[in-house]
Image 1 (cartoon, rainbow, N blue to C red):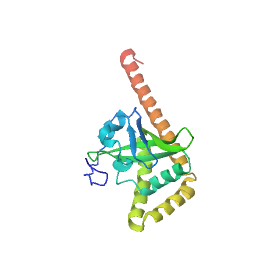
Image 2 (cartoon, rainbow, N blue to C red):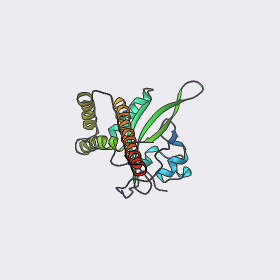
Image 3 (cartoon, helix red, strand yellow):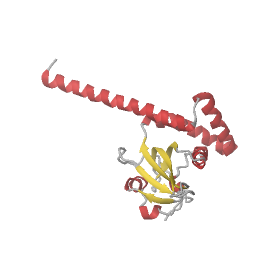
Image 4 (cartoon, helix red, strand yellow):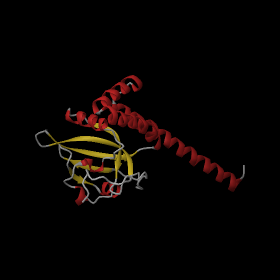
Length: 202
């Protein structure tokens, strides 16, 4: 089986999947995969048997800056649920973008014992806005190191966005989802109007 460290040939092609579905996975406190639903296996192109016991970074795309995952783990270690917009890598080297809602699983004593991640597809508008930010962070990371990338990201969120990463992600997703829904309704109404004219005249 291909390990996460093995270089896959990266293909600039989005994997096709049913974007109305939700990808679900569960990990232990160290990010080891304990469960993957059928949607997850179909999208990432690994079988459940191949995924179980592997670190979740088996699907990490090289276009993702490390600072995004640091923000995630920092929040989870503080006991905070977290959202992230992530570009993931499939077994064949293709990609898919998702918004992930991370929640903390607890045992019978109320102690954290793992994490559940639920992922949904994101509108194209989200990718168009987040991709350039991630590219800048990745460029800084490669040239100046992870700490410099983290410092820039913190300053960017504070000075240009005025929100935490989690707030920024949630608001961006909701805003672009509303826009996408509006465009769909607009297109639907235009088609309906056109058909009415065709069949019934003015």
